[in-house]
Length: 220
Image (cartoon, rainbow, N blue to C red; front, side):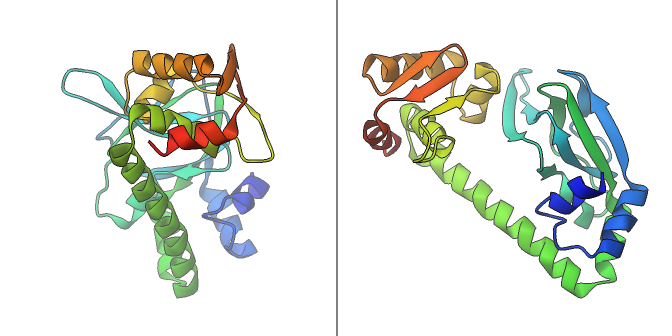
């Protein structure tokens, strides 16, 4: 557990003594695929680090439909910013996309530790600020680009220049919700990219055949 904590970007600059304090108050959780970790509106007493598997963070619309806010992968933390609020409650629900192992970190004790070290507090706030900038960038992408452009940008982000292939490791419906499009729209866009010779799809495996063409689509 200690090594996983040390490798997390949010915690990587904590001292050994601080990491040990976090470890002593942490609890490990295991979730089955589809199992709910917490519900929207529940009291937020802990934040979490994903050790293996994946989590989806989502909100429920009044009509019962889900909007996926974020997909959290191993090494990433979530719900950490809530520790700075009075009597915080989770603004989203969290459920496992696959069998998942988590470290549940005591938020109140972590915040108390930060109050005792100004340097550590600024380090953690810096990490949270970087994440906030990334989320703002994602909001811009969702509002400024077409559905086809969003799919293309997502593919490019996960298939850097030195790679041509990737595996869709989340259900297409979840990915579509993350990109704020309908599942049928996602399928239609993927089919068009295949027809145009931009990508090749075999099951969950996607190969980029024409990266320049995909980049042009991503600019849409």
